[in-house]
Length: 113
Image 1 (tube, rainbow, N blue to C red):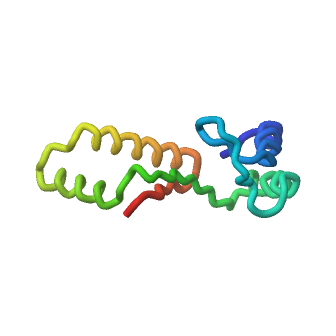
Image 2 (cartoon, helix red, strand yellow; image 1 turned 90 degrees about the vertical axis):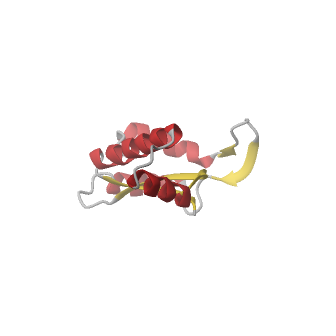
């Protein structure tokens, strides 16, 4: 969220490369959709120091269902013991949101319905 300018520059320069899948397969997917790395560096330099900047952090996952989480929370509220995996998921999500709050950022989870 607030890397030093030197670290940001190295990171953004890497965005000129195409995505590489987790198995090491090179794709043709561009990392930068609009603009270029130089333009992004200038924008980030201005925004990262702006006191009124709104920072957002997203977790995007297809392995989580909002409906399943809501159902598990209803069961816990009704007095049923939660599944151990749900407890772990709950603490991971709470840690994520807590870290976002510490960094003055808004945390979001994008998942299945």
